[in-house]
Length: 321
Image (tube, rainbow, N blue to C red; front, side, top):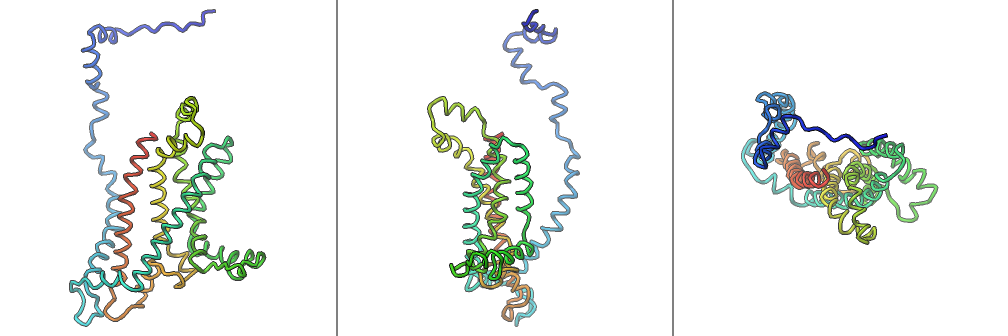
């Protein structure tokens, strides 16, 4: 039996190209074939497919954003001089006193919970990515997707029933005597971690799966330990993805409202709760547009977060492609 593979015979076209020397080969490589050129040619009407999305974005996000920006820099109808007059008092008031404290409280809560979620979610995602059991990986991914989107009043009720002052776990373990309070900054941080850690697992798992086995084998062949591999190879490659995941968690915690409103109320100062109070009319006379200025502050922070997040995602995708 002949185990040797048959030698491929070049086609006439290939023979003609190769016989022309290096110049002919390079010319053939540089010159796109008619089929390739047709495929690469941009289609003039392709952008029409995105038209419904652009219209929806303009109506759903563009018009409200413009209305918020205009209202933030104009006086309200209950002002002594009438409404519609240009003013900076709304913006100035939104970064003073209780509103400034609430803005710092939201930033502090989002930064802390995002950091804990990143530190805890990374090793969990690594364990999932390297698991030999496909069923476990799929189960954890599906569960993370559900938990990452589980929030609002149902999440607050679940924690009140378990870790509230009269909750089952609080009563069984007598946590109140140890200083535990769900209706505090620490308690709210624990609740936020319930959906931030699964969100980090979903975000960082594709990047961990993109780490090539050859990189680990090359490091091992050169005598590197596991710690040295992660310090000099793994973590530097994952750094853009980790920072991107942290930014994503920060934005999710910063914009959360319903869970905090249902659980802690005004006991923890947050900017989202202050906006709700201002929209309900709980402001001084002439500050009817103060809620719009607070909303504009949140939009500015969200834009800064996305401006950092998107370049990090592109850089991570370039490494792991």
